[in-house]
Amino acid sequence: MFSNNRILISRIFAVVFLLVFLFSEPALEDTGWEALLFLFGLILVGIATVGRLWCGLYISGRKSSTLVTHGPYSVSRNPLYFFSFLGAIGLGLATEIITLALLLSFSFLLSYRAVIRTEERFLEGKFGDSFRSYCATVPRFLPKWRRLNDLETLEVAPKIFLRSVSEALWFAGLVGLLEFIEALKALIGVPSYFYFY
Image 1: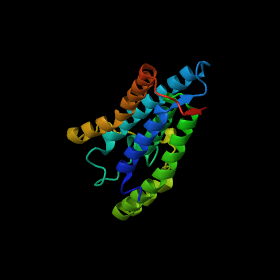
Image 2: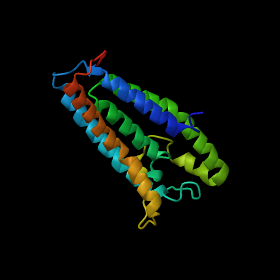
Image 3: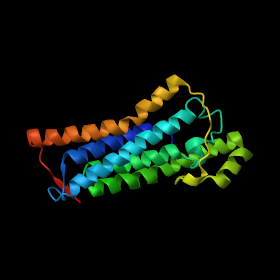
């Protein structure tokens, strides 16, 4: 079910996450730790954004027609989801609430397992032995950076790549939205019902 409706479910989850954030306060407030959590969250969101852009260069216009095995796809079979996972952790940390970061990470891993399996069945059906050989040497999720194999040149479909850019920039936009919500909470005095570490 999740693999068929992943965008809708992701959006619903994002709304729930933002509502929980709206009515929550970090238990580590005014300890100095919140600034470190926010900074580390920003770093992860930055890595996620650049990583998703890198992936978009390689799969824009080729996602279902060609078995992409270079660039980020030479170190992980699912680098786009790996970088999204880093972004989810980063967003959680940017809230300065470790519990939300853990919740986002576990939810992401749990839900995207089905998406990855569905996509791998599709690719195996389409590319057969080539895909099975690729699976035998390239890890499913966590990258093996020493395996990086890149191309000298790459043809990119600009319209499709621009969609990848807008999807990658969501992480940075969500950090901005978190900061806006935090300022709004202080300005209008939104009550906090939850205190999380």
